[in-house]
Length: 468
Ligand SMILES: NC(=O)c1ccc[n+]([C@@H]2O[C@H](COP(=O)([O-])OP(=O)(O)OC[C@H]3O[C@@H](n4cnc5c(N)ncnc54)[C@H](O)[C@@H]3O)[C@@H](O)[C@H]2O)c1
Image (cartoon, rainbow, N blue to C red; front, side):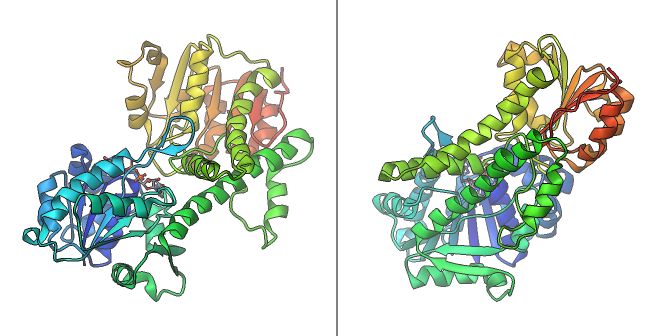
C-alpha cells in the first residue's frame, strides 16, 4: 500500500519504519528540516542521534528503498494521487492550565493537506483515501477532522482513529509486537483499508485487533494512559508512603507480595520521583477537561495529577526536612535528564522540575550527566534565554559530574546507574547526600549509610550516615 505520514516524531518515525518493514511504500513528511535530513540520512548513528529508539536506525537503514523522508510539501502533493492512507502523527500538547489540547499542529497540517488533497487526480479526487488519526486526540476528533476536510472541499475520504500505544524506549520492538491494534472507524470501507494496512498483525495470535467507533478508540487511548498513570501514582502515594513511613519494610518486598496476585498484575510497581514523559500527564489532563465539560465529577483524575506533583515536591523537600540540607550555594549533581531510561526524550522530565527548584533555591552549580539526553537539555536551558542557566554544567562521565559536588540526585532509571554507588564512593567521600529518586541504589542503602552517606530515597525512610 502507499502510505503518507505527517509528523516524524517518536510516533511517526517509529510507526512509519514498521510500515516500511511490513512491505508498504511510505513517505514521511515533517516541517522540521534537520529531523528529516537526519532520519533520511541512511546512517544508523545519525538516525539515533535524532531519535534515540532502540532498533530504529537499523530498521530505517534496512528499508531505505521503501521509505522516503521529505520536508517538501510538493513531494506530498505528488504522493497523494496514489495514497491509500495518510497518518496524522502531530503533537497534541496541553495548552494553558485547564488541560485542553493544543490542536493547532493538527489543524495546520490538515490545512496544508486539504489544499493538496483537493487537487489530487487532476482535481477529480477520484482516489479514496483514509485519514488516520494516530495522534492522541480529543474524543470527538474524528468528527472534527471530517468537518475540517469537508469544509475545505475535500471529498472521497474517510477519517479513522487509530491511537498509538507505543512505549518510548521500546517503540520499535513494541510496534513489531503490539498488544493490540485499535481501529475506530465508521464504514466497512475504512475498516477494510486499515485491515490491509495492518495485514502483518491481523492473524497474529498475540495481537488483539479491535474494531470500534472513532469515539471509543480515542476515549480508549486516553483511558489506557490514565489507568497506567493512576497505577503509578497509587504506587508512589500508598505503597511508597508505607515503605517510607514504617521502619523495617522494604519497598521491593511489598511489591513482590502485591504484584503476585494475577488480578492486580505486575506493571507499575516501582517507586519514582515523578511520572513524566509526553503522554500520561497530558492525556490525564485532557480526560479531566473533557469530562469536566460534560459536568462529570473528575475528583479522581484531579487527585492523581496532584499526587504526581506532590511526589516530586516532597522528594525535594526531604533534603531539608530529613537531612537538614540547604541547597543554597551548594553544588548538586543530577544523574539523568531523560524522563526515563532508553530515550532522549526530556518532555516533563523530573530533572526539568528539579532544576527549576534548585535555581529558585540559589544553588551554586548544577552538574548534569545523561547518556543520551544532554543535547536536548542544553537546547532547553539555553544560556542565551536566561542568565541563570549559566550555572548548569554538562559532563561526559558520571565521575566528572559527581566530583566536587555536595549532593547528587538520581532522576532517571538508566540501568547503568545501578552501579553508581561504587562511583560515588570513589568520587564523593562521605559526608555526602544521595537523593535516589528511582531506588537505583536500593541494594546498597545499608552499606552506603554505614560508610557515612546520608540517603533520601523514594520508598524508604531517611538513612542517616552512620559515621557522622
Ligand atoms: N511519544 C509517545 O510515547 C507517544 C505514544 C503514543 C501516542 N503519542 C501521541 O502521538 C502524537 C505525536 O507524538 P510524538 O511523541 O511523536 O510527537 P513529536 O513531537 O515527537 O513529533 C511530532 C512531529 O510533528 C511535526 N510537525 C509539527 N507540525 C507539523 C506539520 N504541520 N506538518 C508536518 N509535521 C509537523 C514536528 O516537527 C515533530 O517532528 C501526540 O499526539 C502524542 O500524544 C505519543
